[in-house]
Image (cartoon, rainbow, N blue to C red):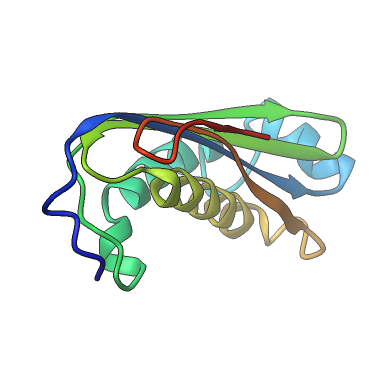
Length: 141
């Protein structure tokens, strides 16, 4: 693990995004709340938040961080759901991995909850949108 003991803490944020493509029928069921496993967005939001908090347990050599904020939002389109996660902390290292992990696990949760209706779903385009804070400066896609 990289030694960050000499680094000063600063406010750090990161935003990530991922897309879950699916059939129009599945999107309609999501909008109506007609998915047999329950409230997909509520469960996927909690899954993403929990995943962000546990990132260091899943990604080897990732520093455990005390997170100050985690926001997971969903945009429902005609044949997809776009998930965006924003994570914030005050720490000596960034939260990019936490934002990416939140998106990934939220997407996997949607897949799990909808797979009985649509086995052709695809999870694609996982990207870091931006990061702020730290000595490497800002990044924005």
